[in-house]
Image 1 (tube, rainbow, N blue to C red):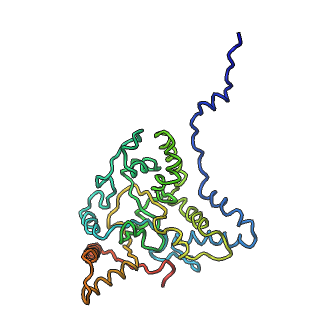
Image 2: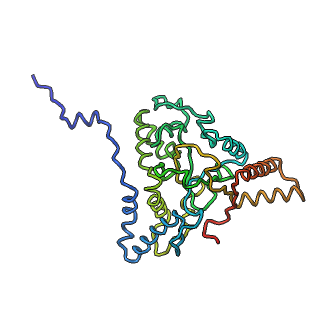
Image 3: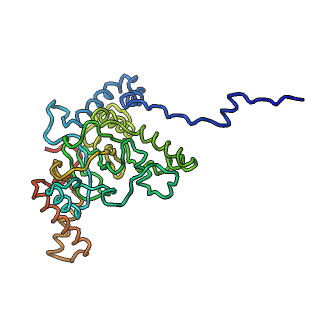
Length: 327
């Protein structure tokens, strides 16, 4: 009788592959070297690449191209945009010294906390994304963005709360993009075909590859992002150019702050010149006509109330008209 042929270990492994642990990503410094390696080998480009890398570090530290001294209040900051209508409540909670004056979706009861479960259809997208982030538990995450010299992400609100450097611990996790991209193509296409747990593990691995430390990695992360959008050329980078790359529309670097913050943790509040112009136009039409829409009047009144609340805690509101250097 013919003996039964045994499958080789390699064949058995192919039939029942073991899940592989994700490889540790290269450090951001290594990624920067790899990205700029071709330009570094070019005699005409190499000096500019090295000079621009140093310039980016100086910009984030608040230093100009011709001075080693840090300009007051300049440099990179973590920011959070809110609608003007929510600012008075935020300021009131700060003055009362409440535990979480700035509230996330978990504080507001929009999302629930729990472990990763196979029944992902029972979870909201925000909850699925948060469970994959390198910070836990998710209800302790307060999302901010890295901003250099602008007014933040207007999609989330017309007023940009700018945190003091002291309000962001050095080991704070920062992502090189919006964490919601974990739920969008192409990452979502990769995970939909997998069982729930494997899909979750894939998102965890991707989020880890996108992450770094605010103090240790931010300069290299910003340099990588800059050269991805602006390939090396024999020209100096300017503050405005790096600022545009750092935050554009909903494409930004995300800061996963581990605690809430109050009005006393803010350096200043910024507003975009376009919103300031719209505000002024509504005021003019209230005086001269034609009368603006009721929604516009309500928006303007909310901004007035927000400004009064901010003045009560000695916070200025600055209009940002340019991303470049100003005097």
